[in-house]
Length: 253
Ligand code: PGA
View 1 (cartoon, rainbow, N blue to C red):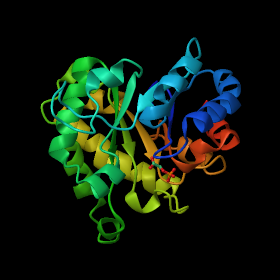
View 2: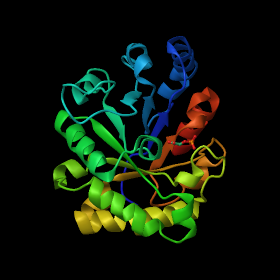
View 3: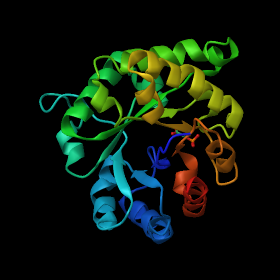
């Protein structure tokens, strides 16, 4: 084990209106702020980012966006630029499997977004993970290592250490069927850290934080956080429930 700081991010996905977002943050801000030793991040939808930002002023809880374009400005209807995100946020989720599956996001686009995030000084949370089909045919290692190689292409050694990776097996996301701690740990070790070591070096591979994501709850979180290769969680559904999310962050502390 290295001294990687535990990290828990809540990915709200397309949930919560402005008023609901305010209510959700109000319900968990105080207990969250009281938990030391964990980097905590909330990732609401764009429309709620400004209000959540105002509520997080002075709190030990960070703010992230769920997506952005890699270009700085221009004719890209419906998109937001890195500097628009940076006005409010310190973190950015890149390459979530839902963006890959429903919006055709490719490893090449993930790579462009990653470079744009590094350039503007956002901390990227890069998501990787295999589908059920790939899992069942024993291709987890191959798929995840390709996602890392192509996604991280051209990233320099110094920048690489700032990146957070979320290992999210697609079959475990939103299904209530989480991976097992052991299984996830093995994938992180064999597919992610090994590829990082080959791409950069062993010291960098050991310094990058790798989260598990996919049906994490307050009750299964300890199983993941006790694994040597797993440094925290990217939480979807349970991040919309204040008690659950607080319990997960506590388990990471
Ligand atoms: P889930 O989502 O916790 O609802 O499975 C995780 C994610 O998609 O980041």
